[in-house]
Image 1 (cartoon, rainbow, N blue to C red):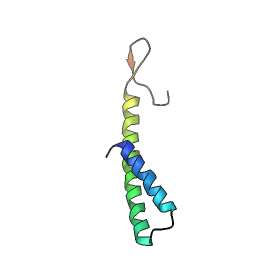
Image 2 (image 1 turned 90 degrees about the horizontal axis):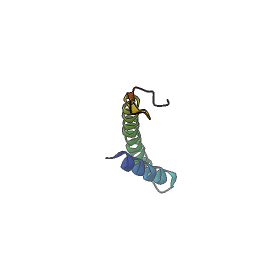
Image 3 (image 1 turned 120 degrees about the vertical axis):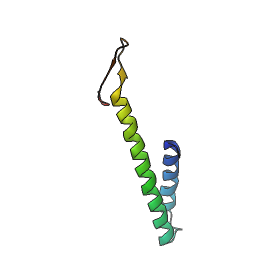
Image 4 (image 1 turned 120 degrees about the horizontal axis):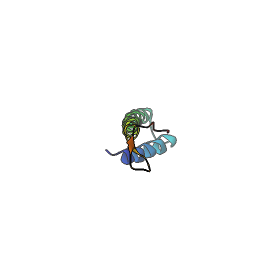
Length: 70
């Protein structure tokens, strides 16, 4: 599943959990799914941050290694 789809599903899970129509088992199953989706999204963000750190092109065309925040 893509990062965006993971976030969309997480949003739906939160909405369902905020409602009052779920029993305890259904709530727990949704919570577990949400934790797994969050783990996947976090991993993808970390990988993307690493790629950005690896290579950034300066305005003069020279490629240099730079921190994500830099």
